[in-house]
Amino acid sequence: MMNDEGERLQKVLAALGWGSRRICEDLIADERVTVNGEVAVLGRRVDTLVDVIAVDGVPIGARPDLVYYLLNKPRGVISTAHDPQGRPTVVDMVPQSPRVFPVGRLDADTEGLLLITNDGDLTHFLTHPSKGVEKEYLVQLRGNPRLTEGQLRKLRDGVELEDGPTAPAKVSQRSDTTLLITIHEGRNRQVRRMCEAVGHEVERLVRTRIGPITDPKLRPGTWRELSLAERKALIEAMSVAARR
Ligand code: URA
Image (tube, rainbow, N blue to C red):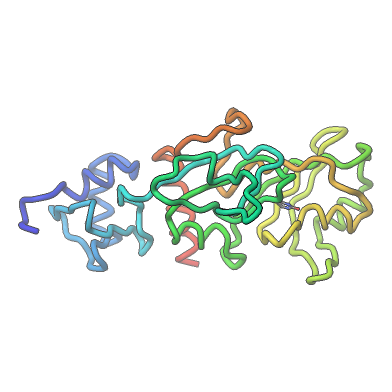
């Protein structure tokens, strides 16, 4: 590309929510921004269709081919990309093109927030246990018992499951009938099995947060695109994890 083609890097960064032009110029001057793997200099122009822009080594999603949907999954819909039995899947609930995939899984009976994207790096970050991204769940137990302090402590410290002990979790009694459980492992049916380990079955399970992403107003069965601010929050979380 000729030097005077494309958009100025600081303008692209600012449009993606990295702050004012001035702040974005500072990011570049501090050598935190690369284009196609090379440290960018001030005045650099980019073509967002082809150039890979990264801040602190993390691609910043300037690529227009990447899409990010936040779905409030209703009960009964499965969260694989395709079901051999032909049942409705979460992917059927969002635009069909470009081809997208759910970020991790929720059980068919689980409701709540699910990201659907074609961004493989983000999917890896959000689902890999080593990245420690928090997922928060609202839990209603069958019979609406109130857990004892001992049961809460067990859930917090970690319970023994058949595939090994669970890592420490944040657990609080949110109301007389609901618990709030935050985990960062994402093992199969983990919250349900944790509750069973202290003697209770889950009646209703709703995911209410994925890392920095939450939306109490998103109605069940509906979806929206992530905002720039949300994408930036995810990129920042990835950038923090990359520097650890
Ligand atoms: N934990 C579960 O038990 N099920 C889910 O769908 C998600 C977390």
